[in-house]
Image (cartoon, rainbow, N blue to C red; front, side, top):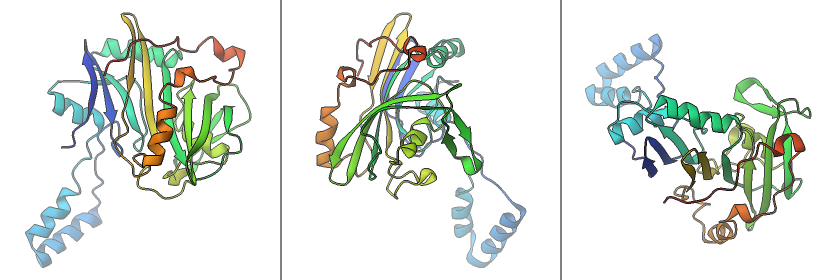
Length: 274
C-alpha cells in the first residue's frame, strides 16, 4: 500500500502531501463479459500464475480517502476539497463530518489562501496577471474558459524562467473550479507540462503542485507547505534555484483583483506547522 506523507494531524484535521496519480475516491475495475472469457482462456493456456497476475490488475484502485483510513487506522475520513489525480501537494481532510463542512465552507467562500506551482515548456502570452472567465464543460472531460464572467474562475499568476526551455508559474486561484489552473494556463498558450488533456507536452508527471495552503480556522490560521517530492523537472538543480525565489509568495505584488472578488480574499496567514 502506498504511503501518504502526513504534513499535519491534530484535533481532527489532517493535511497530507498528496502523491501524483492517486484519485480522491476508490475506483472499481470494469469487468466485461469478454474480459472474463479472455482470462479463462489464458488460465487454460498459460497457467494459473499468469491468471493471478492479470487478476491483480482488476482489483479496485484505492483512492486517497481509503488509503489514509488504512494508514492512520481511523474509521472514517472526509474530504474538505479536491485535487486532480495528477496533481500533488496540500490536501485537507478531517475525521469529523461537521469539521469538514466548516472547512469546506471556508473554501466555498474564498477565505482559504492557496498557492500552486506549475511548469510549462511553452511561452505564455503574458508573463503575469489575472486570468478570469466562466468555465464550460466540453466532451472528453475538458473544460474551456469563456469571455463571460457571471460565475468565473479567477486566477492570479506570475511566471519566470525556471530553466532554459521551461517556464515556472506561481499561481493563486481565488475559486475552486474543476481543472481551473490547467484551463487558465492553456488559455494563455502555456499548457502545463505533462497535461495531455489540454495539449501539454509529454512528461513523467503532470507538473502541477498544491504548494501552500492556509486555513483561517476559528482557533487560528494554520499554514502548510507541501515539499516537492516527485518529478524529474521539479528536482532539477536549476529549477530548485527558481523555487527558492518564490518560497514566500505572500511577499509578491499580486495583480489586482476586480472589486467584486477582492473582499472575498483570505486574510494573511500566520503560523506554519511543519
